[in-house]
Length: 234
Image (cartoon, rainbow, N blue to C red):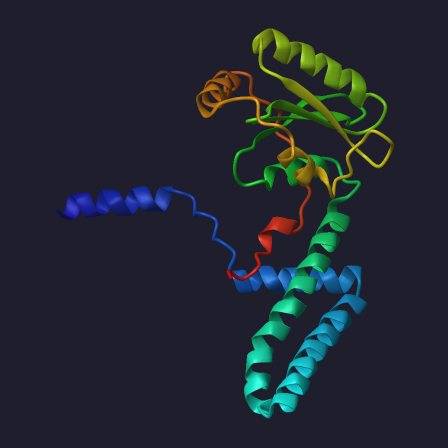
């Protein structure tokens, strides 16, 4: 019995400590610092919205003869309204913090939680133009970010996918602000709006084949992503 215990302790000592999950309060604190740094007036606007909603509720309650009761009811509504505005500012600040960095597109893609599997930097050139591969019900989505060389990288990767996964639809997207490109702020929404062309079984088979292809190890931009900050459940 003591021998087993020693073995377990030795095994536990040899294992690296698992990364601790960040608490919701820590996420809100990080988002607050980010918003304050990006746009200090945003916090003031959130406070203004909170006061306006609370005051409006009390005024209505006063007209109905129940100002205190209305004040209690208006308090959570005022908090939700201010918090909703705060999340919008946090989203904008989070995108601003990673915009223009190498691998920013991959960071946004990998924050999509369900239905999309991203392999970052499957094709990269010496100018740090790169292509990320996403597998989803829409098929294979190749997302390129960088300069002029990204188009040739996309064409090269598309030919590979068409040979390797014959019959699977391949969609090309370039991240940027020019005409025909998708801004990093709208990238997630754009992907989710793509028409679904594969069944769940077909997608599973595609992903099983893609495991043998792999990608490159690329450090992602640091900083909180928009999806980290959750709205309270209604």
